[in-house]
View 1 (cartoon, rainbow, N blue to C red):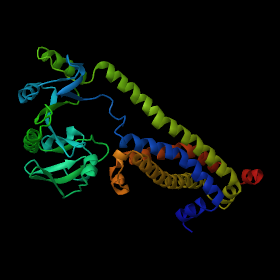
View 2: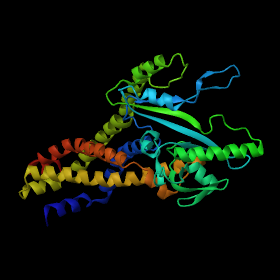
View 3: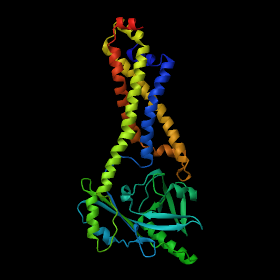
View 4: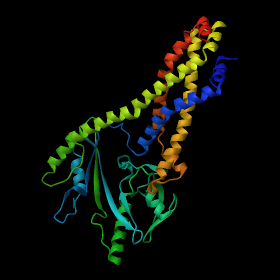
Length: 389
């Protein structure tokens, strides 16, 4: 029998030992995976310490006018051109907005932008693709897709104008639907006609520049640029929303705290559990290891055997924990009706990066937890094994 076949057979020889080893190792693996997947699923990854985006909104909750309503800002293309002059800024994107009444109680918000700027919009597609700027195409939010009962390839009518649905967002995205700037302008005109016909109150931002998104270059200070923009447009009384030094400090604090809670604590628990489990397993196999030493097995071979068995069982634990995490997070997601999706769509939204990161952490956990037991087993002599047995 080859060495590799012997390791595989030895790993599963005693069922009771395999069960408690898999159970013990699966617990910390499950914790690591659960937080990794949950953090990515809801866009709460702590990987980005300092925000690098600044927003100039058309309306803001920061200040209110004399009527107690949100303050509105008149944004223009000239403002975008002015901001682009700052060499510290990588990209400036303007988005347009309109709304459309589906019936008396339901409506949809539609945001327009150029498709090449989609990276700044943080749109997560569960199905389909990005729209083509030169065609009458749309991306529906999952909320709007359910409300309208529309799928990829179907058309959506605005008055007598037809737009093809080419993409549907996941629950990570905002509830707005998306299309090109040109399409939003056309829909806004139809919206105006609709409102005039039925005497409805047209949203004052409809068809106009809604938000300006500013992406700062990687090595630049976003908080300083935010303050500079506020000073530059002070006379215009323009509201600029961006990170400040306090937010950056808080972000770093929560980043470090998240690392401890979601990475270090589960790994520590995993190392301790793996260490205890492996030491007990070796204690149960003292005679077996002694016999292998007696027939000529070298310490190095015993060491490799114990480490290999630990990795095999950890890999199986990872698969079991992955299945459980996917099923549990899927059920948790579908407890919220607005976010409910089919199982296949949910699988498509899961982050491969999160799984790979968790697997990397689990491998380190297995290595640290099994290292001491493997060394101890490799140093056992046949005489010690007989005596302990």
